[in-house]
Image 1 (cartoon, rainbow, N blue to C red):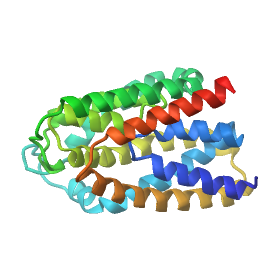
Image 2 (image 1 turned 90 degrees about the vertical axis):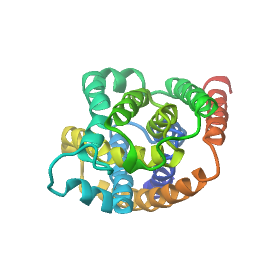
Image 3 (image 1 turned 180 degrees about the vertical axis):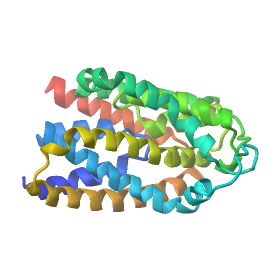
Length: 266
């Protein structure tokens, strides 16, 4: 299979799964293993296409980002999303991720650990749906900094590949009385600075390994991931207007079962 076709496939997988509660990291590991696209070059490529997914969120929520970044006195009770909310949502996972980055990369990036993460994340989502009550926070602009911090603590679970960053944060939001849409939108917004920092951190370590031959593949994957992520976010927000996370949880069980059969039983 040519590298350009692999770039399209991986770009689609990244774009579809990055912001849906099904684990992009888990799918990338499984699909990479199926395609034989692994190792240092695959790691470099995956970092770049994540930037394409990040760009899609920034464009969709550019008004909120510009509003947050506009110079003004800090007031967490202003009835709008602020930088304080975003910081509360990302600092916990950034701290834990920085400390445990090496062991996570060394020991948790395998099909077996992804299968565990897919199942555990699905159970969390089902429990959140089962126990959540009528939402008291229906709009992301009305959430509190405390809610943002607790959602950020739930996000730490996503450091385990397969658990899903959006799945853990949306489930956390449901436990806190947020609507599915508000929880999802906050998950998307805090993904931008979080993923940007993570991507820059990884790029600084691998930049010297790039060659000009890699850039065609990288550009294809970046564009495909951007377009696919943009469409998946728009669809997902509409889906949440009338549906729950249960279907994504059941999908995760199916993927985990198929992955277990493919990698360990056949």
